Length: 400
Image (spheres, rainbow, N blue to C red):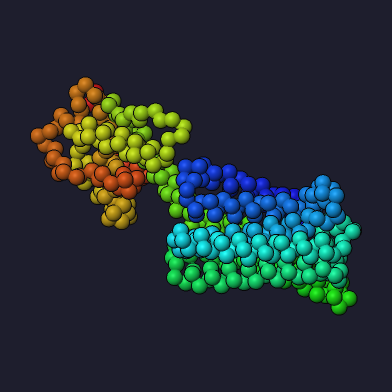
């Protein structure tokens, strides 16, 4: 793998951490956020320290050849501990349980990290190896045990986390289930990296050169698994927010044609109060709905139920279903009223036949956001609405 294959995932994880930092600052007492940010930070740190250029810098700065190996393995142990703590925090939420599990993890993985450094300094690894440390020193006393310890510990962690996530996913639903299943895949892929490296090391014990498993096949698996792991934890938290923002954006865009129709064709059209660039989409949708409701209220006397009935019947003849025909009829009624008000605001053109025009019952124009969006889309796409709007303009032009 090239250095970019290590640093790109590290940059991605760093960007994800930067996105979560504002939430952490606002809720700095939240143990779940702390655990998640710690995991993202450690995952990025593992990729950074596993990159050959970083390995070389660490070895040169310390003056100890291959010191980057136990350093990277220790960070990987800390990442494993943070994953386990976050899963328990995620599942339980009980502060006492989280503290107890955190203590166990700190003790267990801390002992592994200490053992890694002890074995490293008891052994002898004078030749710097940037990419094939595991297989090059597979038969060196103490270094061999250090490599075996980290691979077995990491493999056992991946198996345990996969089993826990799979069991929990059977009871979960929605985004939580999706996140847990993504974690199962992430840990399974990461386990594949540990298996490849362990296989290559064992092969060296028997004099067989399968180094390609450790140097070429394993690292890409680690990169994919290491990136998917934080994503699996982020998905249930960020997924609903992303979907909510997407729905708000769709609603905002879909209400546009109706607002534009009322604004451009009505003399007393709606006016949106300018909002700042950081205003939420939810507030923008609410403002757009309010502007439309206000405009429809002002336009109320000009709305003609006969136009809606005629347009609805025309939509039925064009092959529209009952629901779509009613939407097109309501949209045509609004479009004609706005057109006439714009062309003859001084005479209130739509009101000159009040005696003959049937009144609109309360609730004749839907007020729900979903209904307004359907009417708005009919304003743009319905041929029936376009025809009635055009006929209204021609009739008013002849009248003038």
